[in-house]
Length: 87
Image (cartoon, rainbow, N blue to C red):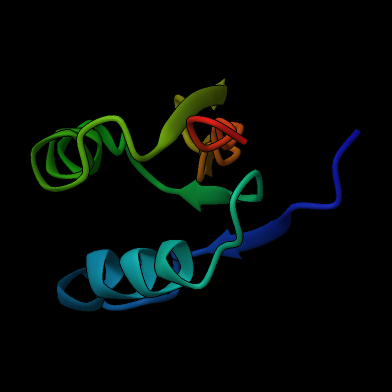
């Protein structure tokens, strides 16, 4: 079980949803995530993430309709820093 924030965008006007979701994503620390709750499959949002932030997000369906979709969207943990050459 994680302590991810739940972001329910069903009450948001459709024109605002992606902006709210991306604002939430940008505020995440490495390794953190949030649970998106939506009233339809957010597949177009996935494609937007893939186009604008390739490799910089995780996407895991938790519930897939028919009335509610839940997706965990996360920021991958930072890769380990390699020691400097000669250190």
